[in-house]
Image (cartoon, rainbow, N blue to C red; front, side):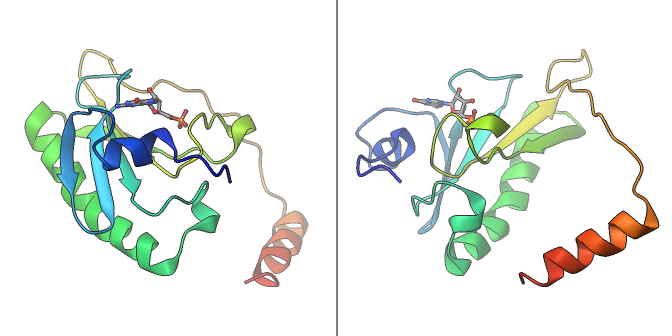
Length: 139
Ligand code: 5GP
């Protein structure tokens, strides 16, 4: 991780302005500066972990507690009934700010929001058993 504070840390400290929607001891939420749709919100842990896997349990628990409440507020404020949560980890996964953040992206009835295509394949019994065992062995 860089020694320099991330853009989100500077925002959390109040050194860069933002449209804040929520704050507690561990979590900060703000409107995205380049929204995919009206209400697009970023939910950020104050702990400056670069990716989700680097978060402390305390910070992750606080984020998990705050997220549904923030989502309910976004639903009520925008009037949508659908939304996507996007959380990118690593440059090749599309992460541009190296400080964990969850995008909450309202899906509006006129189509504004996240659009994506998924390239799924089918999981064979053999590959599934092997991969699940490999992951379990690291937990
Ligand atoms: P990522 O691509 O890392 O998942 O998403 C980073 C997000 O942070 C982008 O959607 C981008 O618009 C948003 N962002 C980057 N800089 C700022 C900023 O200074 N203020 C706000 N409000 N959002 C920002």
